[in-house]
Length: 212
Image (cartoon, helix red, strand yellow):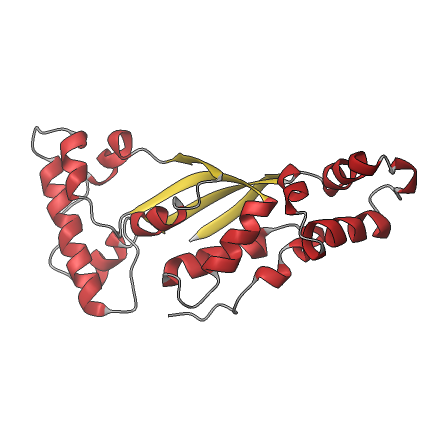
């Protein structure tokens, strides 16, 4: 899994939006401590979190499973541009067989699927990957073959989300009750944020990440 922050809104946009409400522009210190304190007080402490919607973040997320993508897609106040299975499944078509399951074939399979901490699940996933590969050699097309894609198949996407919705995402998905993979993703997203923005989100981190 790899998370890269591609773009984000300067904090000044949020503080100026807040000051627009009271026309208190003369009290701004140009993005300094007063303006940061204003964002924290109004957006976090006073719960006027709609003001945080002026802050947007765009992430390039690589190497998550389609199962994790389904969990991520439940957060609807966000924009998604996802790797197309229709146009990219050919990536495994020219691969040799992933069977028998040995160290070499497992290493090749890891390029395409997310492994878990359970060996039996991983073995089943490699078998499913091989079944998909064989289907792609038949003249049926990607649109049909993708119905046999395992949930562990890796995908990637660009994900844009505002700060208010990101707070909600981090609060829910850093909890140990969340799927282990999206826990890892949530912590990776938080770690990718600009240091000067983290004060907006740090109290939403429910629990530290524990590797499964």
